[in-house]
Image (cartoon, rainbow, N blue to C red; front, side, top):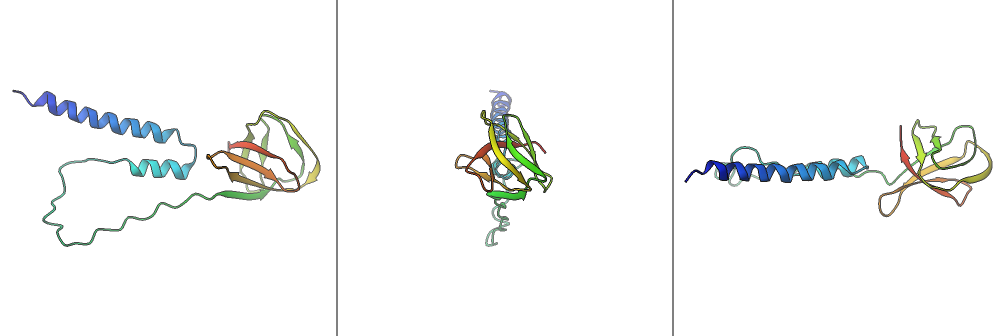
Length: 142
Protein backbone atom coordinates (compact mmCIF):
# COMPACT_ATOMS: atom_id res chain seq x y z
CA UNK A 1 0.00 0.00 0.00
CA UNK A 2 1.34 3.38 -0.99
CA UNK A 3 1.03 6.03 1.78
CA UNK A 4 2.03 8.90 -0.50
CA UNK A 5 -1.53 9.68 -1.76
CA UNK A 6 -2.83 9.65 1.82
CA UNK A 7 -0.09 12.00 2.98
CA UNK A 8 -0.69 14.35 0.03
CA UNK A 9 -4.42 14.41 0.80
CA UNK A 10 -3.79 15.32 4.43
CA UNK A 11 -1.43 18.13 3.47
CA UNK A 12 -3.91 19.54 0.96
CA UNK A 13 -6.73 19.41 3.53
CA UNK A 14 -4.61 21.38 6.00
CA UNK A 15 -3.72 23.93 3.31
CA UNK A 16 -7.39 24.31 2.36
CA UNK A 17 -8.28 24.99 6.02
CA UNK A 18 -5.59 27.69 6.22
CA UNK A 19 -6.81 29.21 2.93
CA UNK A 20 -10.39 29.38 4.30
CA UNK A 21 -9.15 31.11 7.45
CA UNK A 22 -7.12 33.61 5.42
CA UNK A 23 -10.11 34.40 3.20
CA UNK A 24 -12.23 34.94 6.32
CA UNK A 25 -9.63 37.34 7.74
CA UNK A 26 -9.44 39.30 4.48
CA UNK A 27 -13.13 40.22 4.78
CA UNK A 28 -12.62 42.09 8.07
CA UNK A 29 -12.56 45.86 7.57
CA UNK A 30 -11.11 46.76 10.98
CA UNK A 31 -7.30 46.49 10.95
CA UNK A 32 -7.04 45.35 14.58
CA UNK A 33 -9.65 42.63 14.14
CA UNK A 34 -8.02 41.53 10.87
CA UNK A 35 -4.60 41.26 12.53
CA UNK A 36 -6.04 39.29 15.45
CA UNK A 37 -7.75 36.96 12.95
CA UNK A 38 -4.47 36.34 11.09
CA UNK A 39 -2.61 35.81 14.38
CA UNK A 40 -5.16 33.17 15.40
CA UNK A 41 -4.53 31.00 12.31
CA UNK A 42 -2.72 27.86 13.40
CA UNK A 43 0.50 27.36 11.49
CA UNK A 44 1.84 23.84 11.32
CA UNK A 45 5.43 23.82 10.16
CA UNK A 46 7.88 20.95 10.32
CA UNK A 47 8.03 18.37 13.08
CA UNK A 48 6.48 18.68 16.51
CA UNK A 49 8.70 20.42 19.08
CA UNK A 50 10.90 18.23 21.26
CA UNK A 51 8.80 18.10 24.44
CA UNK A 52 11.55 16.47 26.50
CA UNK A 53 14.04 19.22 25.68
CA UNK A 54 11.60 21.90 26.88
CA UNK A 55 10.39 19.98 29.96
CA UNK A 56 10.25 22.22 33.04
CA UNK A 57 10.77 25.49 31.16
CA UNK A 58 8.22 28.24 31.56
CA UNK A 59 6.33 29.03 28.37
CA UNK A 60 7.27 32.27 26.66
CA UNK A 61 4.46 34.77 27.24
CA UNK A 62 2.81 35.99 24.06
CA UNK A 63 2.28 39.75 23.71
CA UNK A 64 -1.35 40.85 23.92
CA UNK A 65 -2.90 42.13 20.74
CA UNK A 66 -3.44 45.85 21.08
CA UNK A 67 -7.13 46.66 21.17
CA UNK A 68 -8.34 49.00 18.45
CA UNK A 69 -9.68 52.35 19.66
CA UNK A 70 -13.47 52.64 19.95
CA UNK A 71 -13.54 56.17 18.49
CA UNK A 72 -11.52 58.94 16.85
CA UNK A 73 -12.20 62.63 17.45
CA UNK A 74 -11.15 65.61 15.36
CA UNK A 75 -12.74 68.61 13.69
CA UNK A 76 -14.07 69.23 10.21
CA UNK A 77 -11.94 72.11 8.94
CA UNK A 78 -13.84 75.12 7.62
CA UNK A 79 -17.54 75.51 6.92
CA UNK A 80 -19.78 72.45 7.23
CA UNK A 81 -23.50 72.21 6.47
CA UNK A 82 -24.28 68.48 6.22
CA UNK A 83 -23.85 65.51 3.92
CA UNK A 84 -25.51 63.35 1.28
CA UNK A 85 -24.90 59.76 0.14
CA UNK A 86 -21.32 59.36 -1.09
CA UNK A 87 -20.08 62.63 0.45
CA UNK A 88 -16.45 62.65 1.49
CA UNK A 89 -15.74 64.36 4.78
CA UNK A 90 -12.14 65.33 5.54
CA UNK A 91 -11.21 65.65 9.20
CA UNK A 92 -8.49 67.99 10.46
CA UNK A 93 -6.40 64.91 11.42
CA UNK A 94 -6.14 64.02 7.69
CA UNK A 95 -8.62 61.14 7.67
CA UNK A 96 -11.24 61.10 4.90
CA UNK A 97 -14.57 59.34 5.46
CA UNK A 98 -17.22 58.47 2.85
CA UNK A 99 -20.91 58.58 3.83
CA UNK A 100 -22.64 55.24 3.20
CA UNK A 101 -26.16 56.21 4.32
CA UNK A 102 -28.85 56.86 1.74
CA UNK A 103 -30.27 60.07 3.24
CA UNK A 104 -29.22 63.67 2.85
CA UNK A 105 -28.77 65.67 6.05
CA UNK A 106 -28.84 69.45 5.86
CA UNK A 107 -27.52 71.29 8.91
CA UNK A 108 -27.24 74.91 9.88
CA UNK A 109 -23.82 76.09 8.65
CA UNK A 110 -21.07 75.49 11.23
CA UNK A 111 -17.41 76.41 11.30
CA UNK A 112 -14.81 73.84 12.39
CA UNK A 113 -17.32 71.57 14.17
CA UNK A 114 -16.02 68.77 16.38
CA UNK A 115 -16.59 65.36 14.80
CA UNK A 116 -16.26 61.87 16.26
CA UNK A 117 -16.21 58.56 14.40
CA UNK A 118 -17.42 55.78 16.71
CA UNK A 119 -17.65 52.04 16.28
CA UNK A 120 -21.20 50.69 16.56
CA UNK A 121 -22.31 47.47 18.25
CA UNK A 122 -21.89 45.31 15.12
CA UNK A 123 -18.68 47.00 13.96
CA UNK A 124 -20.18 49.69 11.70
CA UNK A 125 -18.60 53.15 11.94
CA UNK A 126 -20.68 56.28 12.55
CA UNK A 127 -19.71 59.93 12.15
CA UNK A 128 -21.27 62.21 14.76
CA UNK A 129 -21.04 65.98 14.54
CA UNK A 130 -21.17 67.96 17.78
CA UNK A 131 -24.26 70.12 18.15
CA UNK A 132 -26.50 67.83 16.07
CA UNK A 133 -28.60 64.73 16.71
CA UNK A 134 -27.61 63.20 13.37
CA UNK A 135 -25.01 60.58 12.57
CA UNK A 136 -23.92 59.00 9.30
CA UNK A 137 -22.67 55.47 8.68
CA UNK A 138 -19.23 55.93 7.10
CA UNK A 139 -16.19 54.05 5.82
CA UNK A 140 -12.66 55.39 5.75
CA UNK A 141 -11.20 56.06 2.32
CA UNK A 142 -7.95 57.83 3.30
